[in-house]
Image (cartoon, rainbow, N blue to C red):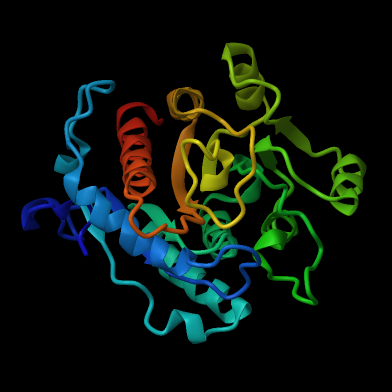
Length: 288
């Protein structure tokens, strides 16, 4: 289970720039289940990636990509304990001066990563860029404050420096919370173009952590998610945004969550693996 099936010399921990942590956590999903199978599907699909990226004229596999084993018995943990465990492992990666890349699993895992990122970089110099079809700002759902649909509400209790892109589904309580707190939302119907990207970047700090729920993409591109929503972002739209963020800011880590593999449908798994690799390529090429 080594991302991109790399040779040992390109996948040893000590010499790797990027460290991938698979988190197959799934406790609170509410519609289509199966996100616990997401990390394994992404890693297996990555075996067939072309490692040279023509856009960045680079092969970042040569910079080293180490894949950690998933946290043992993670689905036996409560959300609170899982968050603490993820935070602890992420902090170790950061302390070793490496860039954490987390693969979910449900979106709740991002709370743990953000806790560690804030400990290292401080909230005054860090923005969370959240790409998602859903606001994920419910205060609680089914008597659970750590449901995956509450993830950004919990993150915003840690830091209010959050930017949200691609949102197209939320409830009235979430909208009231957004208005009350003057949260910056770039809705999915506001097409991602040069002006929008400029506005997004204008609202961010110098360090960026990216949390990307795959349902931000249109279901025609990414049907394998737990809660698909029509009208999402296109492939080149999202790449333009991610590339621009890496060009102008310092991306300190990212997660890609909520892949829910569909048996017999391979392309969403490969698309996700490609997206993960592209983000690493952008960070290596451009990020400050």
